[in-house]
Image (tube, rainbow, N blue to C red):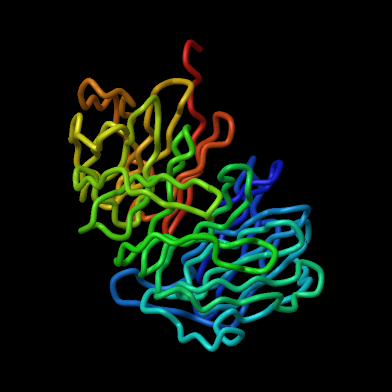
Length: 339
């Protein structure tokens, strides 16, 4: 989900049509739908788009599984412009479909096309630059600042790479072959936690700019967290994420495991930083509340939320939690601490 005011946006598959949909936050009623006559299907993950829409300046940017990039008016869903990232880059549809969420930077919108990046002009939709450095992957481009320099971090089959937003020029790269499906996690001191597949674990890298250009140093690699397509979070010097189908906590200084526990399948999590809690959505559609503390694994509560295979990220807006899978979606009002 992506949220703007009292509306939320998502991507769905309705029969032979791929859909970008807008709903009312209060009652879940449909506000508008944009449909494209296309359908992507894969045996394990099923049918439909894989990405999340991006909202910026009253526009919705959505990349579908077959490569269609739609730019829509957030209010009524009217089409401002549309492209096909696969056709524009001469890229075949990847095994699990195009999965990037668009990144808006300045006057560009940037998407991943099977590991490579393509940038479009926000106003006209014309391609501005395209690089072919990637080797396949399903992560989205990620904007970060290192030493005051804005850059786009991309995880692909070759490892981690960083590019200059205006022209796509390569700034630095860190080889680590794999099959990344997750997003990087940023550490307070400027280091980055990356992963390139569930068999590889996670790695902390340090990036700096000097007189001779950019340098990248691998601090440590740990197999104590092995995410597949579940993102990790960092809280008070520790990383929390999935190790296979269980949760785990590691020390961010050296990657040592503090604990491992619970069974959540290939679920997702959200950090409630102000309450030192993790909100976990399991692959079976159950919600669990887990302490974000390194001392021990403690699950405080668990309840059924939705039915069916659930791989989507939950979204918390104020005290309203939105969850969904390919079959249904639901909203829950969470009680605030102390209320």
